[in-house]
Length: 367
View 1: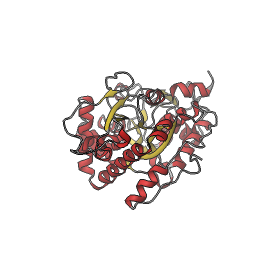
View 2 (view 1 turned 135 degrees about the vertical axis):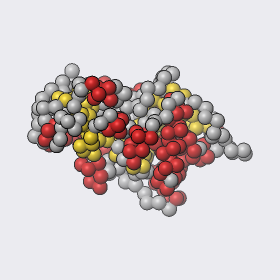
View 3 (view 1 turned 45 degrees about the vertical axis):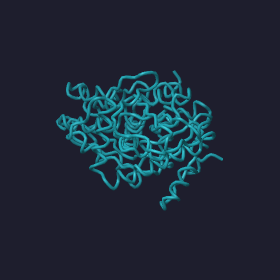
């Protein structure tokens, strides 16, 4: 199978696979009515639109969406246009929903955004904002691995062939001088592709020696006795790299720019509140997780996981390009044309109105 075909089949959300398995209905599960957020009296619809369909994952790395829904920031910005959520389990299904118009806007990791954009020859989506950075760690069994050099010869799990953590680990292994076949995962270190929801059990059984995974899986492994050997943030300039972006259907952006701007305003307000109120925001995210899935995270997992994620409006565009380069270097992706993947004009309009610094598209903006 060609490497590019393998990536198209398997490139998944970097930000992490779902924290919990959510029952899917169609493309995404509808969030349960938590009885909290209501349309304000006298509010009017934007562009006469009844609703905007917003996709996200049940992941802490999608905390902006979780908190924005829970605290009503999106609904406030949208007036009487309903913020209609759909929760997904993986990036490919969210891209499919976007392509089929089942959702209009979505929170998603960089790898499925890159893959979706290139597969559609740049005609389906735009990245319109950032959401989160960080939250990815190499966690190991301290009895088997005591230093980075000890990783050689061991079995390390990543979430999925070609997903962002898989690419990051293969790139890091290559920088150590180790050789690994990207398709089979065999080589100087063995890469085991395993769904995040089963990785803790694989770790407990001893079938893997460590994992390069996103939160909260990393903190779940630590709760089982694992040790954080490396935080991926330490490998990036300023310790920042994109883990979650905001995407939109190009057609929806063209037809309903005011609605898109309203969602972005809600996102900016949410991130501002998260960063000013970290403890309350953490509780709000967990409450929305419980509303969406029926189960909240325990404090021993929630607290360290939340602490390792930075919420930002900046899409960190230069790191998206670097992640794509890593995938090409690993042999999992043919060199993609990412020109036009960003349209940050609506976000920068919102940021200017807020008196906040604008953000950059690293030369990959829509012309």
